[in-house]
Length: 548
Image: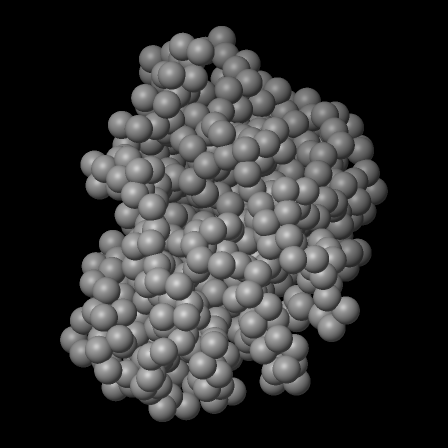
């Protein structure tokens, strides 16, 4: 009991007063909206926006009343499907988002979508259930607006429902959560404001801009990265930025404040390019999974459609100082290292205890990978995926470098110190340390040095206090095959038949593990674990080696 109280206190101390006040306020204040019949009586002005949109999501709604989200299909024929207690909460949220309205080939399913929307309106009276929570409202409202504009829909029932849903969102803007949730609220209100003409539109647009303009400055850092330090969420947010620019331009709403959104978009695309592997997919730091956000190639295409000029950066070292990552590229290797703080300070819900972890691709293939994310919620599995030992870094005395707990909380956090990046086309180096284990022993820091050349990667780990039981974890991609030469040397075979040699200064052991590349997906893999006390050197070689 005392330990949990201590965790809670060490979590709350990072919150903004605004979050605490609104959390209390929303606990007692209930959402009140007019009955839909009241909204039906309005004569709505709809702005004539020629929205073509950009479809990237895969179809998720089907004629046989089946829906598929997070790699799981379910029957949705019953009216209680929207809030079924037997269904996973995140799956139900996806059902309410209605992403299929703007998915690939959505123009071929207009009648299906219309009946689905009308069914949702009938079976989800305001303001009860998952569909009336502010985040689900936000994502669905954007989808509804885009769908109505793209298909010139003027159905009074649907339009009245958009107004009603917008009014419900106005009453529960997520000031108690902030971060990406608040941005999603602002985007949704801005979209509704652009959709409606007259005073109704102005009301929503005003509130949307009131949220968005400061959040653009707050959430996107100087190097282009989103402040939650998750490449997956960065991709989600970057898509939101592009769509917001798109609709603002259609309505002629770009001014000095909103023009700055274009700078954010350009910097954001550049940041994402530095954080993606040669396979075009994101690296897994903090919450990360494929299949949730648009891919880099799709984001680049959308930026080009919007005539945003993204400069191609071919530097061998991309030091993203403000967000806390460094990527290094050589002819046959790509390395990205996390030396970021837990962030943002007041909302670390998507943070993992993965300080000084890395990912490595060789010959265009992922070789060393962090765990990924297969689930949300408060579960043993969720906690496991956030722990330090699920990432390519060092665990001291079997503890986490930052105190991750519950589904989305972090108490005491590691601080990164003495980051130094140097190098040229021949050799790139990164040196950094963190104090995450200081809460157990004073002056106990983990220092890590990465040295990347065209031939190999050397990783030197140093623990600044003697006598500690430390273990370095190196998670292998499931596609890698392992041949044990000795306890100090392993041979890795890639899909391309290329060979990578792993040589350790301390004895290695190989254990079964799992990789979670998508929500709901588990792939069997292996992890190399090296126990050491003071220092450990790992060399990963891919050039000038002979096959055994």
